[in-house]
Length: 76
Image 1: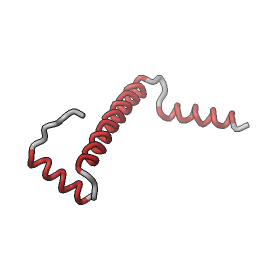
Image 2 (image 1 turned 180 degrees about the vertical axis):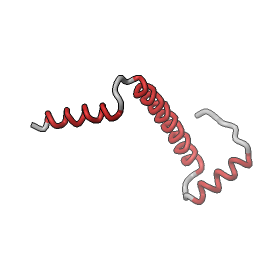
Image 3 (image 1 turned 45 degrees about the vertical axis):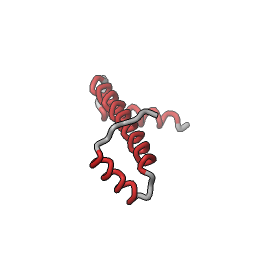
């Protein structure tokens, strides 16, 4: 496992938070880092989706109408 240098004051504050949550500081740090990585990934996906939506030839309203019509046809 890589070692990371964290300022003592920050670590003490983090340990205090971990204790309030009744978690080991190391376990909480792993969860926080994992959550951060997931959030960055989600933000990148949202940004790509937004760019794609701006390039789309249809407006949101038109897209919704297309989806509704598709669902109506496939209900049988």
